[in-house]
Image (cartoon, rainbow, N blue to C red):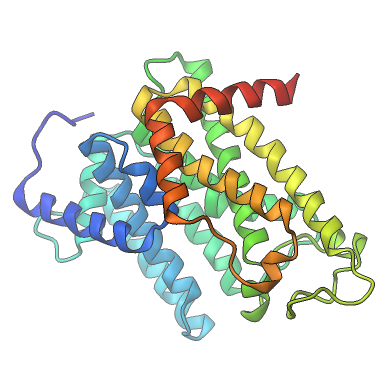
Length: 313
């Protein structure tokens, strides 16, 4: 890692751009990374800005073939980053910041290839018959982000076996966050022609007709479906939270804050499942800030770790 070498003015400007993008668009993500020291916060902002670019291509209004071409162009740019072919005076600030972050931290950039693969699944309109199929998608668009982030966080000097487990836990925590997102956005995704929940789960609870209205179709057990998926997400959180003791204090606080926000969001969905059909369920800013403060103090990290251990007992 080359973190002790000061960044040049062009690189600092590139990081500033990425931090602006993160602050304006990241919502929950920004509450966590503000707890990190400057070098890690900058690197995480670079990862977010690149990931945001990929997501925006997938979510845009362009024709599928144009989206695919732009995603492959973005993959080619990632290849230039990986090969060290991005100069500090490059005109793309996201590429400049990401290249510097990758030089400073052992970031597994292949995770961004996985993200592009996952967004291509969206562009192709793929549906998922089983949880195992959906899990593949979630690993691409969220589990990979967990593993990328771990490259920045590090594992507090742990040995190789524990470091390997840390990558598994980071991946699993990403799955928990993504499944929470899917539950929160079922109505919005349906309006965009997307269905993520496994078809076999939808059929089991009589929800195969989709989620285009504020109320579930007659005969559908929508509450049962949500409760089923919430339990799956909670199990993923319990496993993923085992990452926290493997991180240094501030990295653990960052993860505890980001994941804690989503865990509270999941609890809110569980209390009123049909709320996700009426509109976007979210936490107020003051509650997010409260979770972030608890994360920095270590309170949420200790509480979450105890809950995880009890959940596995």
